[in-house]
Image (cartoon, rainbow over all chains, first blue to last red; front, side, top):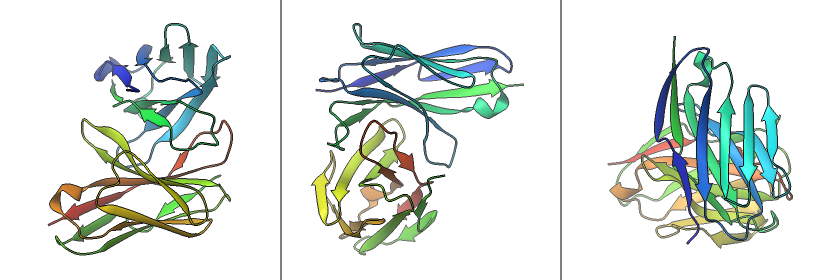
Length: 115
Length: 112
């Protein structure tokens, strides 16, 4: 069964600090991995998308890494801001995007940034 | 910017009612999705559509149906609402290819 596990479940950090969120998956065959940010009361918004051949993808202060051999990804947030407080969701797709329904969602990591 | 609009942010209905949730996207995307999101369970796929009048079941289709008569509009129907369908419902659209999904802001549905 395809699974995506995220850790930690929740995290509290001080403003200005860095943090790293983890995503382990057992989805096969692998097509791509995405990280989304979901603010409270809003829909998820895409941060990064990586295919098999990509190891790193950055979007401003967000940097995602992918190790397809160990089936692990991380999302690193640099110099955190209060607006980074949100849920971060890892999504792994098991087939080319022409077959739209083959995505497995993690349960998310809830990040709280305190002043 | 892609815009995915869900017709209601909050909705309260009674058990046994037929409930319609509407979703419209403005970017001519081929794929559209309906998810529900519950605490501790993440997003779960109810149905998706990859073309007009085409639909496929997701992981939890029981008690739901969908309609896609036009490319930009994807409707979720609760045939006979039950209390266990109280949830946050999220619609998303996506073009073909290695592209992210674009989500609406969700409809928080309460079934009393």
